[in-house]
Length: 414
Image (cartoon, rainbow, N blue to C red):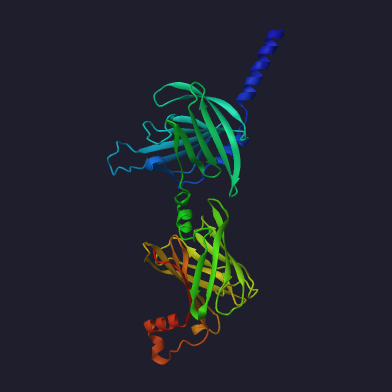
């Protein structure tokens, strides 16, 4: 065999080997940067009242080593209808051969539309990694960009990648921050002698269940105070422990301030299961009693369940006074309070001796943007009715309300 023929065969083998290379690991690292289920919503706001929103319309489609994310969006119109349209757009994220590419629909009016098709990231995802990409701008002009992962950081158990894109010909640049599990969270562009851009509005972004449950959490890091019967009072604040698009944990650390003069602290966690649409309360500690209880006798109850509308019901096996019982919960009222949605839930646990009709009872009210604003629990003993009075449901309900311990959140007058 001639030497030239051998060399040619070796080159062909190398080319075939390169074309058959698996990018599974690189593609997986890029897929981890984006939501993986349909319905995810991004809301962005920024320079000069700019804003746009996007929704992942279907689950990512994987075929022959390529993963496609189909997204629809709408640019905000602060002019009240006078802005030239169309303001709707579509966007596709595609992951293939270790590259994440964003493609905008023609005529899209998103702020960073200079390059309708742009390679956002390339694996391996390492700080300092640099590569070249050829791009065509919205006017059809071709140029080359030098793209660099300039920084990698960690925030709330997520990884942030800050990426800079520089036009080799004129030094025009763009910069994006991409967050694992979310995607792009900020964009910055040059504008005259300044910069413009937009960023993700985190509280309004996510899956529907995530947004609906998070809306009824207390403001993180802000001290709140509750006061109630018999000079009862406590104060505390909530903090995220961890969170992603499937679940989260919020921890409330509190301190008793009631008239007993007995000091005490407690810690309660709220376990949010976004896929199931539930919030479960779990008492971690109570220095006063040493029991995993804070005013409620019910251990680890589901305190909220979607949909948050009157009539929603759920049952759960819980522990009350050391025994397993079945809790029946029901959203008994939804209304507006302080201009925001409020939800009231009743929890009943039959089979608890010492309470009216052997049924332990609690009620809680939750306010959007505020968290729990009211708590009440039935006191043991008789409620003061007898005979035919017990057949009058309205009279029984009034007596129950008058025989409950409770407290409310202090809401300062605006």
